Length: 386
Image (cartoon, helix red, strand yellow):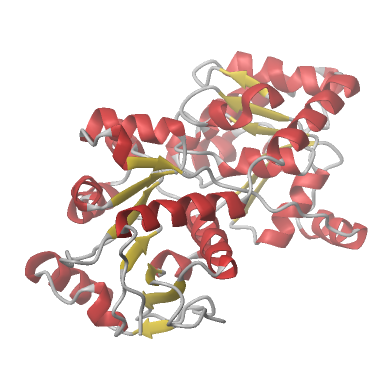
């Protein structure tokens, strides 16, 4: 990475642990894109650290330590050492954590913490025991309370932070996520269609295979559409990592009378995901709760009509650029999907609205709000690195 001169800008240490896991979905995309935009802006001298004990792609990381994670986390939690500064060998003027993780307190070094959602508190039943124990050990609430700057990726998440954690609203800055438009070549589209055996018309969903994403509701809606003659060749494509607590979802797919037309792709890299958005007929995102909802924004940017849940932040992101439905009513999801598939003019209307709305969400804007929040806590008298 290229860094700004030390004598010009305050030094910012970025916790890059989430950058080691591309399958982390929206959180990974947010951390990667926002960190890159902050690097490009030149307002901070950025250093990115991560611990990569296992073999991992660390190309986005400046400083890599290799300590067994369980040992490191136990030491951080119970002894308060080592700190991120000690591990990285950097003396930062501020630390930014793009996602909650183990991080001992460092007096005199302001912490900026991004909070993506409080789903593990609001819907604990959607998480595995391991996930619940991890959140309890990391304790994002305590991290946020000691953070000098709390960053929320949506107004929905900010409201949850204020109401559930008791953090004053003036301490929480909303830094909406962004999207980078992508235009795959025709050859890439054809290769993706062949690689994934995609049908001519299909509903696309992108997201981890887990209960919060409401795959069962989407499957129910799909089952309502397929018996109709005009939808007898309609496919359903589910792209995203396996997630957790998904036994019921996998069982429902296996038992579906239309299972031969359901594609379960697993994690899909950026280039192929961009192709999927271009090839699909409609994007369905009926989540019970989202802290932001990056896939609908990506779909809108690609000109794909969106049917999304009105719950959580998904409705905040989509606005009037898509059709919002009740995630607890599969028949409503089915009707919305059918209306887009049946009307090319309606599909074109939402495609145009989606593109226009998505253009207002940029990673540069997200990075600037993040930088502004960190600079506010540093104050006008910040000491520049020597």
